[in-house]
Length: 388
Image (cartoon, rainbow, N blue to C red; front, side, top):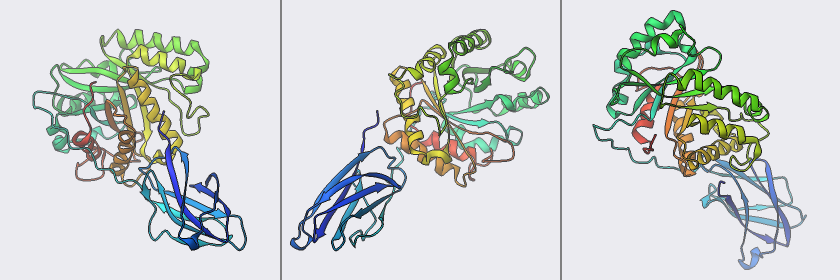
């Protein structure tokens, strides 16, 4: 699991001792006795452990319990990242005094240089809306990296748009791989791949290949409590996906949302995840779907990171889907989530930038604006290569 972070407070007291309470982001950490005599130049370090993302700022608070005593907080740090200076403050017996600790500055890994003959399809772009406005010039940078791949959400493919989507995909899928123009499909067991629907129509385009897919199926609770759901999903995969794309992999999206009661439980030892692990093993792939704006939900994001660690430890490719949810700087959000994963030593196989809903969020467009294109280009230029 994640290595605990260390919160350190350096303090001294006049007319002590006192008991010092400490909290982080309004969550109490504990109490320590401070006996170091400030008048004699003594100092005392106390530490607390917890799990926090250092890629975002935090606020550490302190107070003490003795009237007439003065507590001097001389320094505050999280994993060695110091609080903003000047930090020294003399505290009477008052309410919480708070100190800001900035986010760790994470240098992006150096751009990955890919030989021209190698096609690593690990920077995805697409989703639900925007393909009708996509121009070949919008993908200039992504095409040059030879790492781009289009991600097509099932809802983007309606029978009435099949001809238009065919034309767009035939023209605009980034540089073709060794065996064709590659796409990633996001499917659902309710409509996708039915005989005669939009998928059934355009997947047969000559030169278009699907090596993998993402499957929306059950919520984490439904899957965990029903072996019948697991078996019916496996049956759908066998009859509708494996039969059509032999050798391809498919990743179920069944991990929890921000309020799931099973956040923080082990994917490897907790019985709640047995069915999910079985479905991932059956499909040969795992996946996470993370709105970048939710990255401040620390417990949730840490849980997702641990899911990625668990899946890759089990030998499965792991896809990370990042989406805008009313965020003003989507590319900045992508960088922050990637930093959290990479700082934790988890390097997703592919990172996909997708939108969800027409008319809201970040759209496909110029690589020079805050678009899916710019975020996907940053991924392609900075993501460490991982075997698919």
